[in-house]
Image (cartoon, rainbow, N blue to C red; front, top):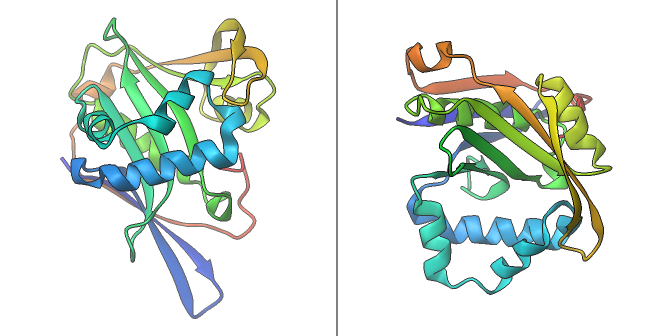
Length: 209
C-alpha cells in the first residue's frame, strides 16, 4: 500500500515547492540517518538522553531500524529532489496495543505548512491492518508548547507523566504522555491510496508544525 500526501506551498505566482509525506523506504536509510542526525543537532532538547546512542550507530543499525516491521518512519520529502525536510517515528508497543508516535521534527524552513496533519494521516493508514492497536500515544518534554498544542488540536487526552527524565541536552524534566483511542471503524474502512493535496496559506501557523 502506497501512502502519499502532497502539499503545495505557493511562493508568489511563478513557483511552488511540492512536499510529499510518506513512509521511508528501506533503501532510503541513509536519508533517514541524515535528517535524524540533523534533528538531534538542531533540536536536541526535544529528545531523550538515550538518543545520543544514535550518534555512533553503524550503517547496519540504521538499515535495521528503517526495515523493522514494527516501526514506521514517516518523512516529509521535497518531491523534486527526494530530500527529507522532516520526519516522525512510530513504533508498536510491546503489548501490541499502542502506536507510540514520537521524534517529530520538521526543518524550520518548512514549518507552518500543516505537515503534521499529513504525517498523522500516513500513520493511520499504516495502522489499518493492525487491528490489535487500541491507542495512539504521543509525548513531549514538559514546557514544549508546540507539542502540547498539537495534542489539544488532535483531541489527545493527558494520560501519564514520567518524572525526572534526562534529556539529550543533559537537562532533567518531566515527560508528558497523551493518548487517543483509535476508533474501531478505522480497521473496517476501505484502504485506498492516500493522496491529499492541500493548498497552504502563507500565514497558516496553527501549531507551528
